[in-house]
Image (cartoon, rainbow, N blue to C red; front, top):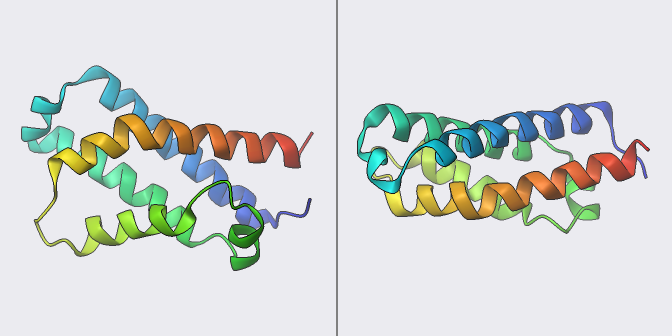
Length: 115
């Protein structure tokens, strides 16, 4: 399976920022998101995951359909262009439910491609 070097680098970025989301969200409660430091930390890391996903080549995204890349990228757009209208419930839900699944899928893609 062919993955370009830039795709590989972006996948590692997704892993790194997913790890940050998982670490922070496991140490706080949903109420802690009312503290801007916690909210901004999760929002920035989620945004960066989406940015890395948007930099994956079209070919890669089309051949690795086990991840809904469009949804990952759409989350980034909502965070960046929401202009202060962040939905704390969505950020929390994505952080604790979706990001661990995304991280597992990306780690599996990397394992299958380089072993």
